[in-house]
Image (tube, rainbow, N blue to C red):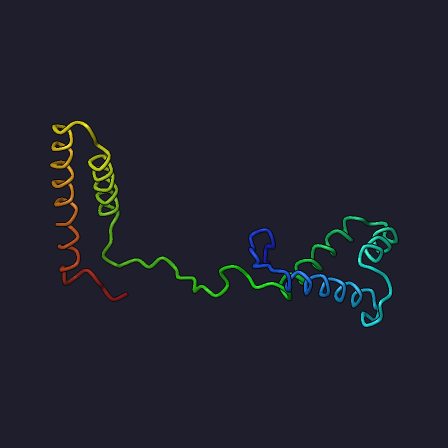
Length: 153
């Protein structure tokens, strides 16, 4: 899977931006076979000469995109790179019926919580929510306690 630079967020600061410029220049000079220790040209002149020397502009644009991606990866810390990505874990006893009940209960909860200025309607929706919550909790409890819920495959 290719690393997509459009979906990567980098943490930048003054020092890392200076490092980025140096890394871009180093990568370009290395690709061109020039010694990057000697100050030959500034970066804009280098890119200008590379682009004008090539007939296939699309190819150079793709190469330049790769240079930018490499320099970003070398220079900047990625946002969220230190966070551990966890996959959504499921339980073996969960069913589609429980999903439907959960969605219904959540909808009733939202209706009850958003009802204002009408005490009768609030009480009616509170009763509906409480009843729906009980109808949702009972099957969950049954499924959890069912001894045959986890079958070996």
